[in-house]
Image (cartoon, rainbow, N blue to C red):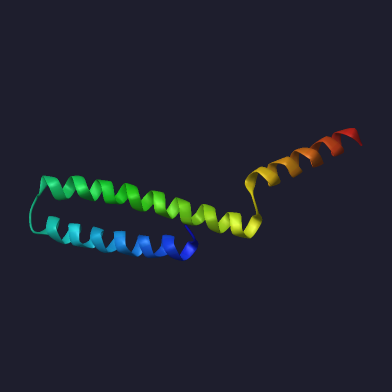
Length: 79
């Protein structure tokens, strides 16, 4: 997925969350409450994916960054 696809899915899931909150504002509904919890979990995952992908685009692959940092650390110790 790219950033725009994730953002589009976030908007879709947020729309569903608004609908569920509206349903719950009219009275308790066990099914809606359970779905809301699921939707909130999905949103959290989507936002984490979005932030992670943005960081990867900006800073590069985390494994490469860690390897470079370890190499620099070894060079500092050797000096």
